[in-house]
Image (tube, rainbow, N blue to C red; front, side, top):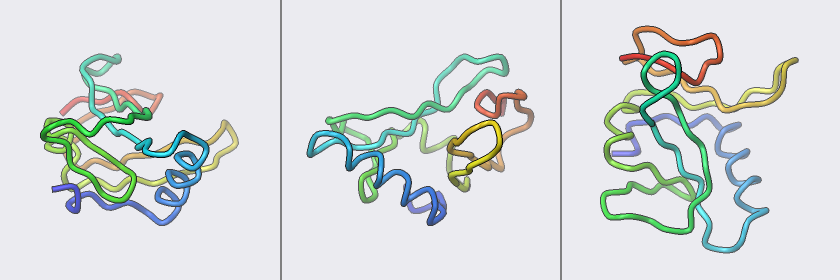
Length: 105
């Protein structure tokens, strides 16, 4: 279940701000895709459709397969010298790329 993922207050606030600039009924989708230099990568996008098997909390949707990989993670939003981004601390990650988006489990 999506409630097994912790979203920091900063992450929820940023998602709400981003979604508010989109057409009504748009959601923030978090996915885990195959690819990247370590095998998997996180993907953040906007979607107007909630598919069968998607989990939803507030204005965030995550597909079932991605949810399995993200279970137990913490999602934060960080502002750093090099820019701003969502950061995922995933206890299942065995290694990650320097970019912070690509990882292996």
